[in-house]
Amino acid sequence: MRTRVIGVAVLSCFVSSLSFAQPGTDGDDGTGAPPPPPPSGDPAPVMAPPPPPPPGPMPVEPVSTVDKGIVEDANAGRSWLAPTALTEPAGTWSFSDFELFLVSLHYSPTDQLSLSATTMLPIVEDQPFWLLASGKYQIIKSGNVRVALQGAVTHVAADGNGATAAILGGALTYCIDIDCHSTVTGYAAAGFAHEEQSAVPVVLSGALAYRINKHVKLLLEADTGYVAGEIDTFANGFLAWYGVRFTSKIIGVDLGFVKPICTGDEDCDIGLVMGIPFVSFTYRSLKD
Image 1 (cartoon, rainbow, N blue to C red):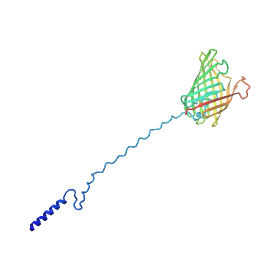
Image 2: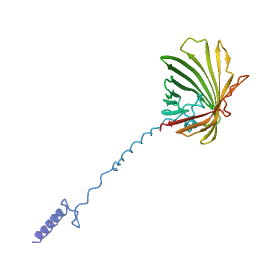
Image 3: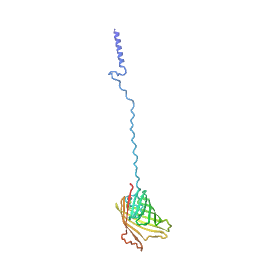
Image 4: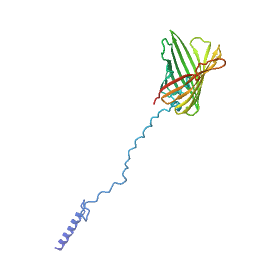
């Protein structure tokens, strides 16, 4: 009997040990198995998206090569009548009127090239037709010095007859200040007729434009002539121009007098002490 009791006890202990060793149990408290360990190694880093590309360069406007004094003076391309070596900004249109009956249209395709056409309004019946077409090209802009070449063709027609001539010349302008508000100009040109000629007329001019304030300039000019060839002589005097110029970017007005001055024994008194009044007006459209 005692042997049976011992066998039952041993069998009970064996069965109890099997129950504690079943999968899904952890032994004492009956809770579930611990979670599996994390995977070995660090996780891969998350890459940030690349930044957007930088904006492209902003378009840059071409730098103008025109002096400030020209931009602020609608009449800077000439003195009283003689041209200067200054040229207007590209895209500029202008209209000029001299003494009411002489009109001129001007255009600048580039900063260095100026084109113009000048004619007379028909005031009287059977008035001759006259046209002057010219071009001026600035070839030197160095420091305070400007040099330009000018070419022109003029035509006169009356009563079925006509004559054509060419004019070739050049202007040298010295800017007294850095912006070319005040200038000194020398101009020379020779005329060549379509017909055979034995003499060549030459025009010589000198001019001063001196800035008094922002909108007013003193304007002086002297014109004379020389005939080369068979005659070979200078004119017996010159035309003296003097007055003031009212300046702005859009409008320019020249007010003054022109008086012939004779040399030697010649008498060119016109009976007007101050000379002949002269006025010119210019309207200019600058390209933005």
